[in-house]
Image (cartoon, rainbow, N blue to C red; front, side, top):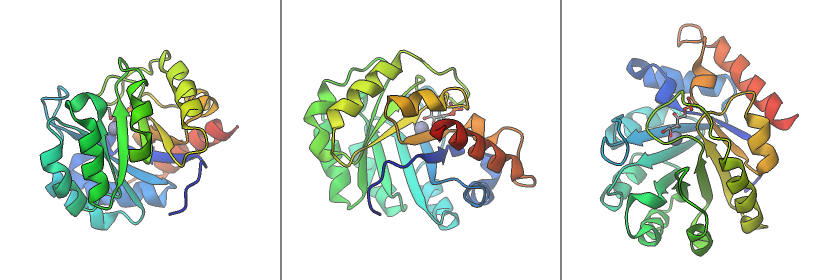
Length: 227
Ligand code: DX5
Ligand code: ZN
């Protein structure tokens, strides 16, 4: 895939019907999703548990496009191979998940997958400067990770602006994760983001039996983002 800063909407299946992941992934792509964002939580790094590599492998055949796997787990390194084999296109690890993020990013790249670096709201970007050669994306968390449906933390916008400046011409995406809505989408895009994760704002009002609202929601976020 050639690098582009065109806005990409990445619905998070954390807000999907967990009994119907395959159908939900097909539905959001049919309804205009650019990427599918997959939130892996371990009940240790974050206070919630979702699913692991076996579920990622099971949903992979239902995703035609790009599978963006967000690992909220610690430790990370021992599981990278499993998520790569499960079919992730990009694997993000958290800067806060362990003492050796540089090694972790090298390990992700070594699988042939794209590497993402996720940073919590309380983390600054100084350390990111030393990791830019190893990443294809930086994911700025605009909520504390662990749950969908939380309120967007506005103080992160300054961080996104600084990160955008730091990245310059490098082919590195900036992803925003948490509290993205029609209201916050224009703010994050103006600050320099190009990948917008949205869980509750995409899935609200719809279901696998009635997926049209997903399309309406995705279109509304995209329109607000590019206005
Ligand atoms: C939070 C997850 C997010 C979350 C986004 O820990 O990483 O992807 O599901 O959900 P909303 O869009 O509802 O904030
Ligand atoms: Zn996420």
